[in-house]
Image 1 (cartoon, helix red, strand yellow):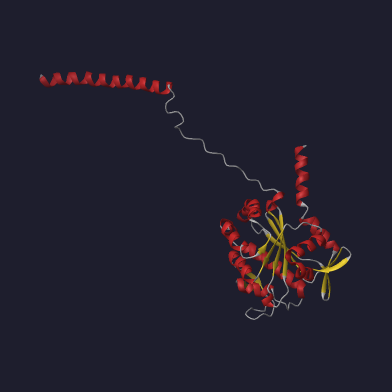
Image 2 (image 1 turned 90 degrees about the vertical axis):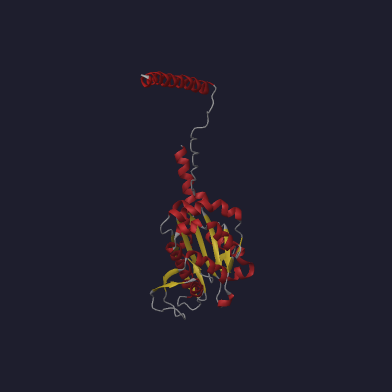
Amino acid sequence: MANKKSGSIAVPFLVTVFLGLLIIGGAAFGLYNYFGLGKGEGLKEPVPRQAVTTTYEDNHTVLFVLETPDMKCTSTFVLMRSIPKDKKIHLMGIPSNMIYLVDGEQQNLKSVYDRGGASSAVTFLEQVFGVEIDKYMKFDSESFMKVCDVFGGVSYPVDADIAGFKNDGSVQYLNSSQIVTFVTYSLFEGGEVQRAYVASSLLSSMVNQADGKRIADNMDITFNTIINSIDSDITAVDYKKKKTAIKGMLENGGSIANFVTMEGTPADPDFIPSDDFIKDFRDTYFADKTVNKETETENAE
């Protein structure tokens, strides 16, 4: 009898406690919401990512100069036209013995460079091609080898009689030191014209064979390392402006580089570029900004 009485008391007691909790809890919840307590503690909406658009304003043109007096070779000149929006890099080797009539006077690229350095060579080439060359980068053997190491060397066909190379036209892997030796070889059968061709085509192959994403991921370190070891008018501000566009091109592009063979007439010991080629070069590789602006105007209308 005693056990039965205890059970009959316990059940109503538990029910009463349960109902009390519901009532108190409901009231507390209502007050909590009424006074706005706890608001703002929910999950925050993700911050929208800002889309970065590459345009033709990101284009840039740079004159590369390789000066290696120890190799007993004239300086090497390669003009680079970079168009990140199209994911394209155009490289053109320029024979150091190129001559052209500027302001009524015949001038020679090598002589202009020897007298005034890279900035004078830029001015001369701007006058020849009728384009704007934004910057220059002048390398010596050591700094150029650093660049080659960044890209990881290159596999390239060699048909020159150079010690340590196979002279059979077969594709060979060239490390940074061998690349310098090859592009500064002064006894090519085609002279400076062939050497200019080799320089631009080899650089094009080296870019296309490299791991673009790896290079893009290490761009800041690479820039600081290279820019501090060369003569250049490129600044950290210039780099910052173009960094995103260049990185996107390297990360998302395939075979982004190609080379342009300069056309003209050998006139021993000089080389005279073709006026038709100069016009075609300018119209083909420097018309993109104009085209882009015309397209934007049409879309706005």
